[in-house]
Amino acid sequence: MTRDMRLTPSNGRVAHVSLEGEVEAERFVKGRWMSVQQPMVNITETPRGARASQLLFGERFLALETDEGFTFGMAERDGYCGYILSGALTGAVEATHWVISPATHLYPKPDMKAAPDVALFFGSQVQVTGERDGFQRIHTGHYIPGQHLMPIKARFSDPVGIADLFLGTPYLWGGCSRWGIDCSGLVQTALVACGIDCPRDSDQQFAALGQDVPQDAPLERGDLVFWRGHVGMMSSDTMLLHANAHHMAVAYEPLAEAAERIAAREFGDITAIRRLPGLG
Image (cartoon, rainbow, N blue to C red; front, top):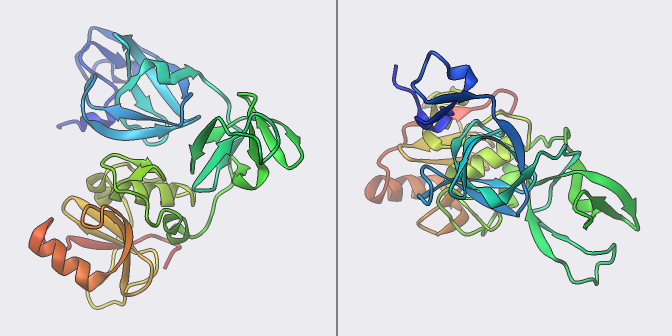
């Protein structure tokens, strides 16, 4: 069986102990959980390689090997494997809350007029250590407006509503934030925010998600539409919401128009329409 290297924590030199006897490697290690300490960081297939995915502030990464400024390992969110700049990682932080607004600011004090130090994005994870004047103090010593946080276990119920938060976000291959996002990143972000496990890439999502919608059945809000290399989400029976390179942004588009354009210029015909349990 051919392994999907995106989900295989092994690079030939080092591998996770769970793969001992299954892959060849010089060393097998347990690894060490670490947390992202900057607003976002790229996951690349090779050191200094192309961006394949991203992790956000506070998300955890199982570090297996560090060499020449890059750390190889596996993302906790979806098991995605690759390389991260070592300086973007710090010791593991036990998150208590996550960011639920498209973006928020880290303030040096609990005052909305204070000059913020940096922005965080939807899905970022923080450890709240206190509260003052409507702001939550987090483990870095910064303050975040309380309205922008929710307890780490809390989830939403409408993936389309989450995806809509990203309307107008620039298209970015491998992206997963308001700063830039791609088609499968949008779907994953929306589903994970609603407590639905979701792989990272569109081919993985095609293999893992939902039940086929019969050809003659009307489409419903939340249905996923797949092409070979692209995915979008229905906001109604006729309207598609997707991050796409045609608009270079997250945009609404009538499915009929999108399907015609995509068939002619990009990914060919629709390969499947899937409905997730409990959403239809």
